[in-house]
Length: 151
Image (cartoon, rainbow, N blue to C red; front, side, top):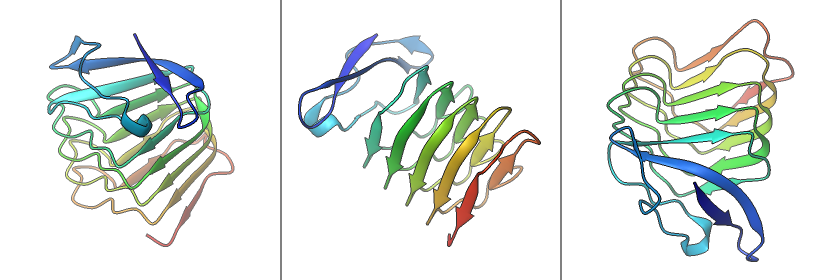
């Protein structure tokens, strides 16, 4: 578990980081709250609110998605990439009010964005989600008030 702070130094969240599917707390730097993750890694946000991810890459995870969000929200992904992961680029379950702006989600094993059950208020804008094995953006039947704009 690692502590993430925002630009003002306020405590934001504890987040588990993994490398080659092993937990590791020394795989990132907190320079301006950017997450710098080692190659073949993934990040799991579980019950995290108010986080920000910008200028990051979560690519080439050898097992599972590049990013998993579960029961999280009030957050922003900006100008980042999730490419070449074994399954989805980003997998979300029971999340609310998350914005994805200028995110590349290409060449993943299933979908670029996989919104499973219970997501609400997800905004996907200006994204590149092509050449994924299944779909660029995949919604389940219980996704509500989610929007996709000009990608």
